[in-house]
Length: 301
Image 1: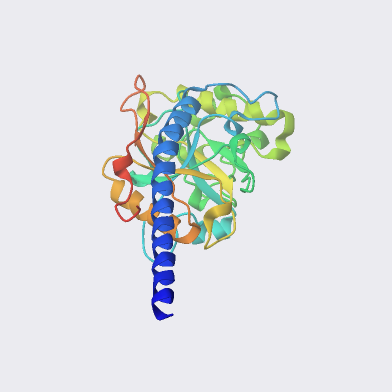
Image 2: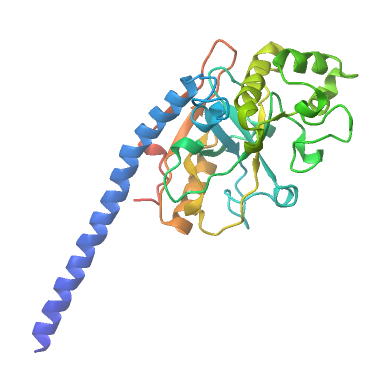
């Protein structure tokens, strides 16, 4: 009887081992398949320079371009959670990268982060997070009125939402920008283009004017990133409900991207592909999105 029980136990253990190996193989295989697909998808969205997503009330960011946030890996918090400042202000800073909205570096010289799906491409069951406003250049938003789209204390009457100041075109925005008392403080002087859902039929053009403005700024401001403010989402230990499509890194940011990959896997059970992002060094170059299976963290089978 003991021999029979021992034999049955060996069979069960062998079956468990085979199942674990199959699961590990499936995980690695799914990354190998989805990684190149995501890199191709990001490239396609980067090259898609449409004015809107089919109507005046659907801004282009709903279906094209790359909505990305750079982050800093550290102990005691998860990269996907809004910062303490964002929890108070109600807004989270992102950037928008597209063939007609290029930049050379990430905010604060950071070198890794994550990408959100555009709303129209978000898989079922994941949150739709509203984009509130758009700045053609970094908006110095930490000091602005909540949620980061309002006035800056340096210029409280000249830095409100553009539409409240009678500014609705790229040319008007540039005239306002050039009127700043100090060129060094122009980012604080600028106004934000309102792209909230409540803008309705004006939303798509408002965002498009922000993109047009980006190109009118010229070579001097090309290296600096633009800025979107997204509505703050709830803190969570399980990021499965967030519309995160991929992790990315630039330069030597792979090690931190891998740490984020492990954190995400540990908390959600899913593995996010890591995409290498090569940003353009000048306005004639384009961003490049590359997937390399060797970028997968070694601890992930």
